[in-house]
Length: 625
Image (cartoon, rainbow, N blue to C red; front, side, top):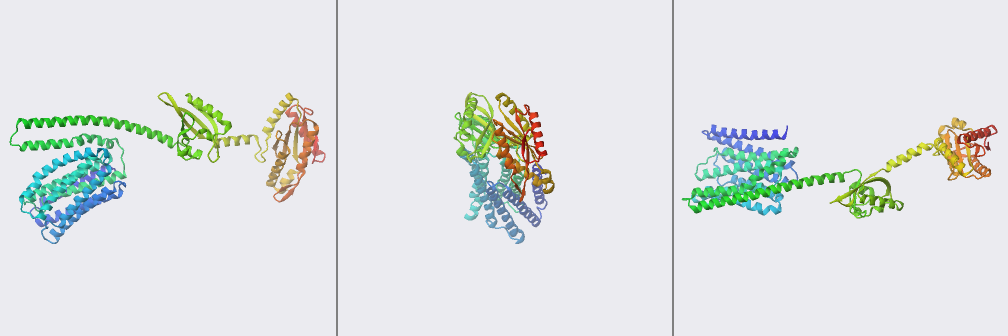
């Protein structure tokens, strides 16, 4: 069920309830007991319903509005107590309701709590710089209202002179209280600008209008000694209370289903004309009333009236122009605010590091991702030079990029940086020049952390050229390195050796001890080979238990033989694998460039052939081809 439908249903209920009350009063006007009993029950029940609506608004409203709705709830509950006491006197005890009496106390408390609610709302929402203007507007309206109230209500009561001081004070308290309520609702109406409260304010105003009307009619009938319980004006009191409660009902639905429609946002602007003209309309009404009561109209009265009218029209035109300027200013401000919020959202919530630098390369702004990346608090980062995070060997390049950016050229580049805690990051950075009035005043940067991507690239690169079990170079890497070494050796007239190694009895170890032990043996062999070769040499695993070595910068055959003896001696030592001592001797075949072969393929074939000759001649040693 939509909020709008619930609102229409609530209005229908109020109108139906009040109509039924009027029907009851009209139908049983000749049966006093039924008239008063039904009327009092309807009044009490209506107050109770309004109390529930207002209390629900108090519970579900925002923190800033809770006090307002609580005070209205207490005021309405006071009215409910007054109605209940009226039933107790008139229908239960069967006596005339005393005047003044306990019900009057709670009727007055309703006005006190309502006025407290309006005062709280006014203090919370009236803008300080507009307070004086609103105060004068309110005083104008209240002056007119007080004048009419004095003329039609208060003055007749005082002139009657047949009441003692206490009843007189209570009688005067009602119109004065109504003036106070009018003051409160007019103050809120003129002093607040929140569109979300406009609908609630409208129904509060209707409710208080009916209450003031009913109170005025009641006092007028009392002054003529014509009021009786069950009067035709009694339903107006409950109609007023129900509309006040209905404002709370609508507030509850608004909190549950907030609306941001353009209609709701435009409401304050639609009401501006009436809001601005209200004080002047009241002055005109008072002037017309004064003129109607004048015994004669002369040229001075006419001239005064025309002058006042022209002054009011001039003031309204000036205010209308000011309002138009204010609306334009408001629209521009709102557009700027929306634009700023969009930029701020893009800046603050961007997952990558977003920052700005001045022309010297110092940070001017940084989003949370930048703060987290560099490990500084935002206030520490602002004013800090960006070179703090760049290694010295990269600072020259960073300076050149900044210079190009400050010339108006956007830059995209990758740069390694380190955080405050020394953590390394690799960033992909885009620099965009910041132009203000065609002058470049800084750099806007976006840095994406690609550290993990770089690690993955390096890992993929490593796996493409290395054996995953031992970490040695694989067949592909060894083949490419061998081709490159042959080409360089031909140019430089150098000698190098290729060694082909096969582990003796490795299959037997796998079959008897298991493949896990076999794998650990291969890792141990690979580790010893790494320790035996130089920095420029390459150790690789071709597959299974086959290894190849590329021994560079040998100089002569003696150096090759010494290298082979070192490798053989290392691999002959027992391997400690899983608490088991394993001896796996190698068979090593050696081919030397350019003595044995001059191409990569021939070198591999010769080394492989020499290795098989070792196996055929007893294994566990090395042999040149």
